Length: 326
Image 1 (tube, rainbow, N blue to C red):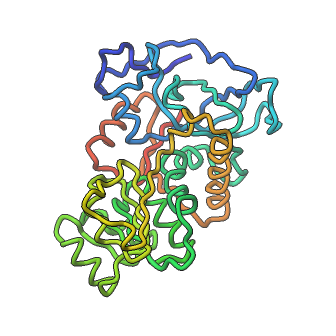
Image 2 (tube, rainbow, N blue to C red):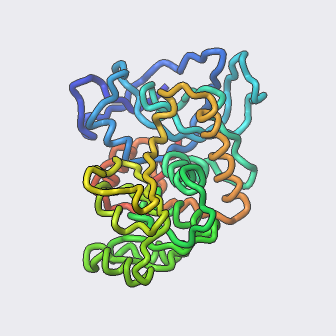
C-alpha cells in the first residue's frame, strides 16, 4: 500500500517525508483495519516529524486521524463492527500511523460515522475536536460557570471549542489576530481580542468588570499569564504545559489547573479512558449530523499534498482544518 513515512531516525524535517510502498497492517484480535478515505492534519503531526517518538520503528508511517471503511475485523469484537461500516478514530502516536491506504486501530477507540456525516467531516473532528470536547466536558464541572476564554479561537481546537462552549451556554471570549476575526465571530464568539494589537489583560478586565474568567483553555503556552485572568473558583485547562505555581496560590483563589494530554491515553493503558475516545467522537459526529457543529474544513487536499499541508500548519497561517483525501 502507498504510505507517507519518515524513512530513518535521523530524518526530522517535513522535507524528509517520503511516499513509500509499505505492507498492509497486520491486525490483532482486538483491532480493525480500514481502507482510508479521509485524513485530518494536525500540528502534532509536524511536531512528531521534528521530534520522533522513542517507540517508533523505521520507516515510520505518519498521521493520527483517519476516517474510512472497515475491511477486516478481529475476532475480539465486542462492539460488533462489520466489514463495510464507516468509522473514524484517533490513532496511537507511538505506533505506525494512518497516512496510508489502509490503517488499523484497537476496536475500543473506533467510532461509527453517522449517515449524514462525510468521511471528511469525521476526520476533521478527531485530534482537535476531541481535545476541545475533553476540555469543555471532561476536565471541570461547568455548573455555575458563565464565561470562558479560548485562546487561538481560529485554530483546529479553538473553532470547535467556541461552538461547544456556546452549546453549553457560556459567553465566549477568544484571542485571534485581526485577519481571523470574521471566522470566530461567525462561530459565535461574543468577545474577540486582537492579541497582537490589544492588551489581553485589560480587555478581559473590561469584559468581566474585573471579576476574571470562569474557564480558560490554553493551547498556546505561557499558562502563567492566564492565572491572574481567572475568576474566583476559576479553572485553567492546559493543552501544552501547566504553569509554574511556585509564586501563585491557587488555594487562596479556589482555583484549579488541569493538564490535557489527549494522545497520552494510548500509553496509559486505562481502558475506561480509551473507550471514552470513541464516546466523545460519536458525540461530536452526532452534533455535526444534527447541524449543531461545523467542523470548519477550510481546505481539502490530495493525499500526495500532505507534506505541503503540514508546512502550512507549521507556519501558523491556517484557519480551521486541512483534510486530505484518498
